[in-house]
Image: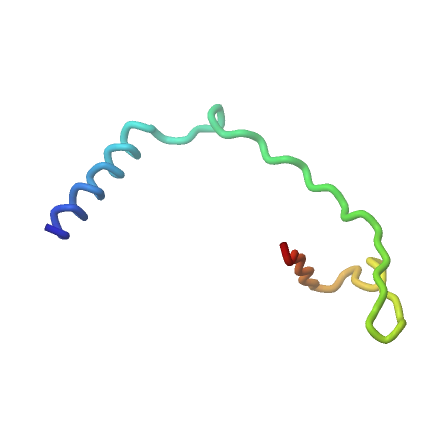
Length: 68
């Protein structure tokens, strides 16, 4: 039963892709142009401060989170 369900699901997806047709330049939306990050300053734990200028030309991961 599980095998039959998987086969039917795969067939439905294949049919959907076949009917959708290939993506062309006419059907794809243009990508938005990147904009520079706005300047910022952030306080550090020990009273120091940091800014975006300290991070220029460095690989940086900024993690945003919320507790709600």
